[in-house]
Amino acid sequence: MWNYVGRGLVGILLIITSVQDIRWKKIRLWVVILGMVLICICIPFSTTLSVLDRLLGITPGIGVLILSKLTSGKIGMGDGLILGVTGIELGFWGNMELFALALLFAALFSIVLLILRRADRKKAIPFIPFILLAYIVLMVQIK
Image (tube, rainbow, N blue to C red):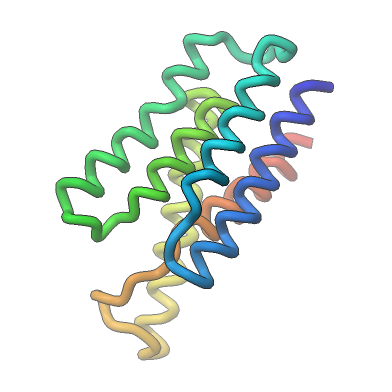
């Protein structure tokens, strides 16, 4: 049961931050921290992943945070924070799968925008909605 609670919390967090990312191109840090705390509360009651796997799950988020610093913010820090929190619930490989699928969806969307001439290659698009879409696909696939 706690596995479902944790997955539900991640889903709620992604919905809230997706709306924020689309509307304001920013996410509220307190929302991410609250989501992380609630997910961490579920960890002792969940037996699907080890604590080490959950800690390693944070690494894709850390990598995105480093890329954000190296690119002077061209990649959002919020994206890295969200990937860090999802990694706590999904573990390393689950989070890598989520990240790869989100990158695929973002790339396909960007290609469509370029073909339709709705954007050029410098246009910034919110990434968290693609993480949400990838999360939904992965959750449907699991069932």
